[in-house]
Length: 318
Ligand SMILES: Nc1nc2c(c(=O)[nH]1)N[C@H]1C(S)=C(S)[C@@H](COP(=O)(O)O)O[C@H]1N2
Ligand SMILES: [Mo]
Image (cartoon, rainbow, N blue to C red; front, side, top):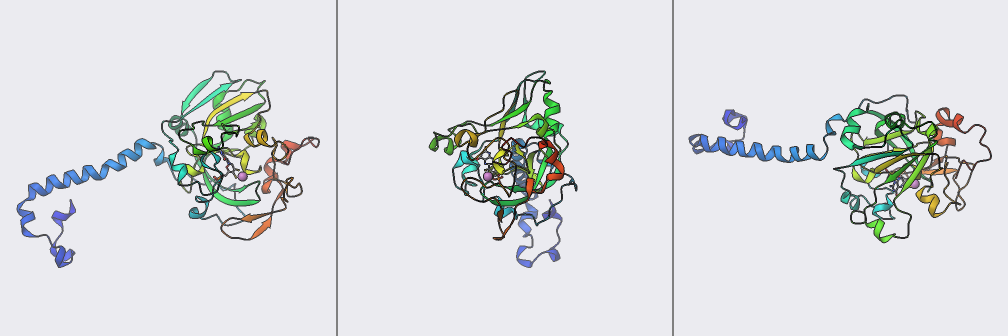
């Protein structure tokens, strides 16, 4: 402890060590040991809660450059869609009820071998990188966020799907005790489900995030692991994944199950195709208050446009 070695001239007179403490050096040392133990307790508890915390921040992948400033953390972490915790944007404090350890992800369906993997084992086996990405909500607002995670193709490789698997169906937890929205909106088709084709999952832009702003995901962002499909409307990017199923059946997403006319399977961003109830031509940049034009595929056409060649008959944009 530095206190003992510190000299009088290093501190204001009022804090200079009184003589009786030197006389009780033993007591002081015992007290210091107790303090050290107490100080290390919370840190130990945190490490137990999230053993991957030391992996952040990860190196940035410069390939994913932004055309706009990042959304400040205090804004993005207080404006979230996470219906498991309520239908409003201010779910951040309620989302702290989400218990993220222990956490397992079941991988099943058309795979070589069904398995259940622990979140920390999975994260440690993956090459973490940072990507700055735009997020465009179907409600016509957007953010630009610094995610940490790994390509979804790594999950596909890990799962070893059979060649007859055409889709990846993903599920969020179902826990009415933990998630008030799953109780109050009991008529919604819980759990939250979304899906992509295996080809989309293998596109390099499909990303699995476990962190943001250089640290593990805060709960409201969909801890401990969520999907990001930056070229699609935000509702496709499901949070808090507990199950990944490979299948030959096109999965029906949560919003599609509720209102298929408004929220389809593909849901690629397109400013020229309006939502049945509002225009998608522009978006509100959250935190700035201004509106900017929305870009086809949210500006990521160079990565994904080829995926949809020859599919003109499909409803690609709702
Ligand atoms: N499980 C789950 N995932 C979800 C949602 C949700 O309500 N539940 N909302 C979606 C919608 S509509 C959007 S816009 C994004 C919001 O992500 P963010 O809060 O991290 O910005 O999460 C998506 N993923
Ligand atoms: Mo959204």
